[in-house]
Image 1 (cartoon, rainbow, N blue to C red):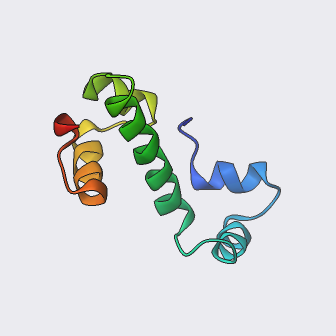
Image 2: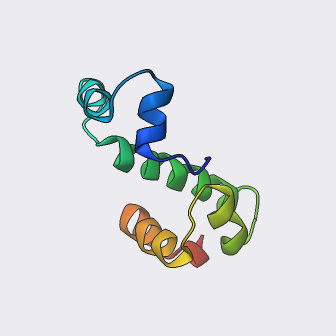
Image 3: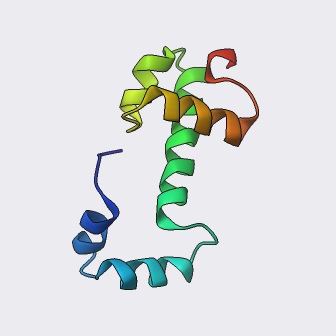
Length: 85
């Protein structure tokens, strides 16, 4: 949930960005960025539903810097507003 860039993640794995993305495609149908957003949203859903946390709090906790982007991505993935959970 840290705010690492794809370049930083690639470097952490000892690969160039291009190699990291190519290797990632071998194990996932999603790009690394889309996979990361999906995982962040899954964690956000749990925090909202089961832990009863507020949207603003969850947004930051799962690594979204922009609440508007979080709301849009959440609605796209779950078909409901994050405030409706």
